[in-house]
Image 1 (tube, helix red, strand yellow):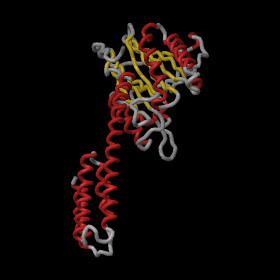
Image 2: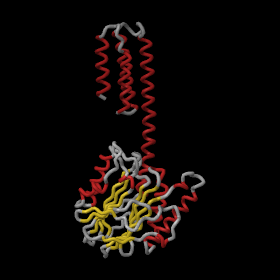
Image 3: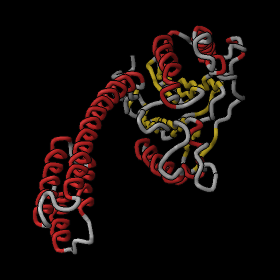
Image 4: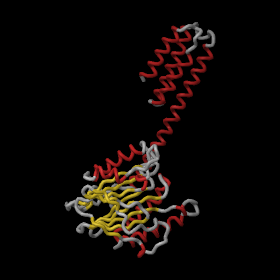
Amino acid sequence: MLVPIGLLAVLLVVIVRSPESIRLGPLLVIAPALTPSFAGPRVTAVVAALTVAVGLLIAVLRGGLTAGNHPAQLIALTVLCMMVVVFAVVRERRDRQLARAQSVAEAAQRALLRPIPERIGPLQIATVYLAAEREAQIGGDLYTATRTADGARMIVGDVRGKGLAAVGESALLLSAFRLIAAQHETLPHLAWTLDDNVGRYLVDFAETDREAAEHFVTALFLDIPDDAPVARMTNCGHPPPLLLRHDRVVSLDGAGAAPPLGLGVLAAADYPDDTFPFEIGDTLLLYTDGVVEARDRSGAFYPFADRVARWVGSTPEALVNHIRRDLLAHAGGRLGDDAAVVAIRRTDGRSEHRLHGLL
């Protein structure tokens, strides 16, 4: 409030002391015009009324209300002040509508991408999600986990596209994974089943969405038993995970990758089933291509493996926080695609299984 009121006071003094040949009266409208940037319609209306009052006072002090072009200036000032107030009312109404829409969207997004617990059996887990669209908390990237009879089963994926347009495919895959992940003995058969589900979904919507036929989902499936120092992986067109062991960072390319989900070109027996050591103290780093494809101003990609090597000894939570800050700094504060990172460390603890959010 001090800004527009102080401005009016300064203009009043300057205009009254200025020669009559210098007409600074139109500058009074600056005060109400600035007010909606930090206040609502009521405060704007008060400042507008004060502005008209100051205009009347200036007219009286400089020859009277009917002298010269004072009537025209006062009428114009009053009309402009009324327009500013109307603008403030409309803006506040739209801000409320946007706030309600965002709250509903955030609730739906939180229900879709439920957080993975910090502990699942002997695993310590941390995640970070950076949506390309600032108004969204999630987009086309996805991850979740569930318990099996002897361990944990996880998925990290990336729907073609970004932002809210890809949320439908994300919702389908996450829901299907949570329902059937523990019912399949092997990851290849699970991947084949989900591939069939995604393909059916895309066919159903092909008539209403012309781009649906071109959609697909890259996905990486992990099966980590509680009592064996190994991890099993089935990769469906997704970037390979990184294994952090001691002071080394190793890319787990495995025997290769199957095509992305939704294409329906493989039988269950054709999906890869890789097994690699995952011992106590090791950390697995899962990520989406929005991380490695982030560019700086010169167009250089983010050197993910090289940067991660700096923080090999960090806890999963500290590791993803380092990656978040460094990735945003590399990309200039905004990413061109959604990005997700999941850090998983095997510990020697046998904490109670926490199933919150793992339906």
